[in-house]
Structures are given as C-alpha cells and as structure tokens.
Image (cartoon, rainbow, N blue to C red; front, side, top):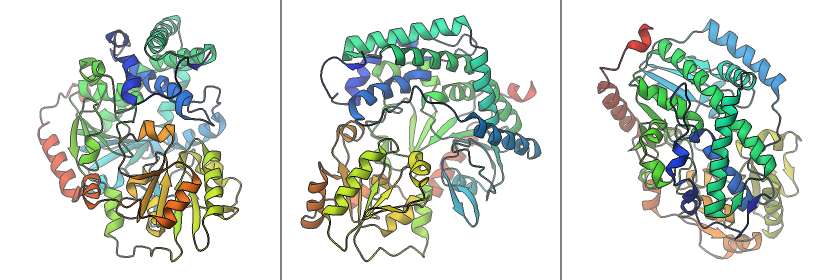
Length: 494
C-alpha cells in the first residue's frame, strides 16, 4: 500500500516535516567523508509524499524511468574534449551551476544565473556547469567554463558498479527508519516498489560520496577560488560539495535561481535539522536572495543576504522593451509535471474568453522539449510560447496564471494581473503568496473580465526585487573574500 492511510491533504510543509524532526535520522554518515546521508534522499522522500497528496495526474518522482545513456555519453565525450583542450584557470570565484539557465544572447549561449556575476567580477571567475538537456551548450559569450558532466557520469557508473553490501545495509536502515517515522507521524507508507527503488538510490548516493568529494577537490586545485558560488546549494545532492568546501575554508554562497517559499522542501527543514551542526555543514554558508520577502520564507541554516535579480534587472534596463500586445494576452505557465492538466485548463479558458483575448501556454523548461516535439505551435485557440526566456513573454502579457511557477513572482511589476490556481499543490507550495486565486477556468474567466482582482501592491514588488544588485553583490564578495585571506592552503599543495 502506498500513500496516506488517513486524510487526503496535508495542511502544510511544516506539518509534513514533523516526520523528520528526530535526531535518529542524523546518525547515518558516510564512513569515507563523514557527510550526513539523510540529505542524499531527503528530497526524494518528501517528493514521494507530495506526489501522493498534491499531484493528481502524474507522479512527481519517476521510479521506473530509464536514462538515455547513448545520447548522454555522446555529450559527455564532447565535454571531456572541451575540458582537456580548455583547462580551468585560477580565479577568485568558482561558480558551480546546473547549466539550466542558458539563453541565447548575441548569437551565443549566456547563463542568466551566473553570467552577470562573472561580468560584475570582471571575468575573475571560472564556471563548472552541467549539461542538463543533452544539448551541446556552445559557443559561449564567456568561455571561462568547464563541464561537470564527465565526472558526474563516471561517478554514477562507478557508484553503480562498485555498490557493496555495506552501502546497501546502511541505505536499508535509513530508508526503513524514515518510512517508520512517516508512518507513525503521518500515516504514510512507501510501498514495496518505491521502497526498493529508494534503497537502491540511497546506496548509490552513498557510494558516490567519495567520488564527488574528489571531483570537487580537482576543481578547487585548478581554480584556487576564494569563494564558491552555487546553484541549488541547499539541495541534498549538494551536501558533499558544501561539506568539502567548508572543510577547506572556502565559503559557499547559493544564488537564488527560483521561488523560495515556506512550501519549498529544499529550504525548509524540521527544527532538529535547523539546529544540527552536521546538517549545517551540508548547507552553504550564505544565501543570496532576490529580495527581503524571500529570506523570510525559509529556515535553512544559512546566512541570508539580499542581492537582487541580475537577469531581471538587465532586461528592465534595456530601452528596447517589447510593447504589450494590443489584444489582451493571458499567459499560462506550466509546472513541468502535469502538462495535460494545464493544456486542459488552457483549452477551457480559450473557449470561455471572447475575442480579442488570447490564451498562450508556456511550457516549463522540464516539459518544453516534450511539448514542442510535435512541431505544433497551437492547439485549438491556444498558442504555445516557444521562447526560452520568459521575460519577453511577460512583457507582452496582461495576465499571468499558474500554480507554483517562479514566473508568477517574476511577473510582479511587469504584468498587470497575476492569478494562482487554487489547488492542493499551490496551497502546499505557496501557502503565503500575495496573488489573487481561482478554482476553475470559469472563475478565472469571470475574474479577468469583470473584476479588478490580480493587481500587486508596489510595496510587495519592492520586497520581492531589491534594486542595485551589482553594488550589493560586489560588496558581499569583497567582504567575504577579503575576510578569507588566511584560507588553509594544504589543498593546493597535495
């Protein structure tokens, strides 16, 4: 049996996290690195719970998926050649990113998450990026970049082949404990199939810990940074990176890359984790937020700094902003998981809204390639937004609609009206959002046509998006780097 035995919807993430509010989950550590094991599966366990409670048409975690190894291997080989022919060079700041932030600029790729930081630091940076969509991400505006894909592929294969009884035993014990806690506190069970998958996943993560540590040490020796900037720094898969950098006295700062709310599982933890020194070592030292509102939303044990949103600021500084469409345009933002649910909403909304209203569906990056694979640009009266960067689409829109998308917040100050689809998913992930909400397509269509709902206060916009990001960022980096002059140097001498 999977899922909950009692109740149909959990009230909040804080209520869910009570299952991990016990020190026994923090007794499992990697014997080679000393890093906690719970972060390796924490997100997966909670996402499985959320899948049962708030995702009605598609599972949030795919436990039976297969990797496209042939395509991934081809990209990995190109990445090996790139890394060998363009070796990393010393820089004050090492930036570790997923590569998901790439956009086109001046005929080349530009990372909207890290590129502006590199420009602000006058190129005194080196980036290590993944290749998440198996598309070769070159040429680049900033060529000071290496790729982590070869090392990650090797670590995955080594961990899979070298899996031993000790990793299986410890993984089994941790998963068993987590499931017991979830059943006692929440009445939730994994079920046999998902339990077997989670044990294998946990064991492979444990086996990969030493390899991840050595991989980071390679980049630290080559780049010799005084500061490490990361994407997804508070996520569990970054535990080894954070712990290793901390051990060598190199401060880690996560730059905000999306929504960080009181319903975000990576940034909100049970009290016993928030006060635990071992868990704190698996987290970044700093979190660089878009604005003050975000920092008030989570309790991860990091120092919170307000910086701003470089990409948003850069677009707003441009003089050639696109004009808003003459016909009222309603932009519906997908969530990357339940695509069919969103398409159904768009179709119904397109039938309910009269001309000249236009309804446009914008796929989430996770579903974009899948949606566009059919080579169609619209379904019925609903068009599909094919652009990679969301901001040109926001500039053209009058109304933005979604459940949990970052785009809801990015629209604040750019789009006249914003609406959140009131579902178990949005109630869980955005419990304190500042937007208007609706329950059905009919309610939304009526609200758009007959009410003034959806407008955002100026004070809220200011707390979401801090100004002068360059000055804030350089002030932060100067302070951290200058205060880190006596960093232990043994790493570079080994």
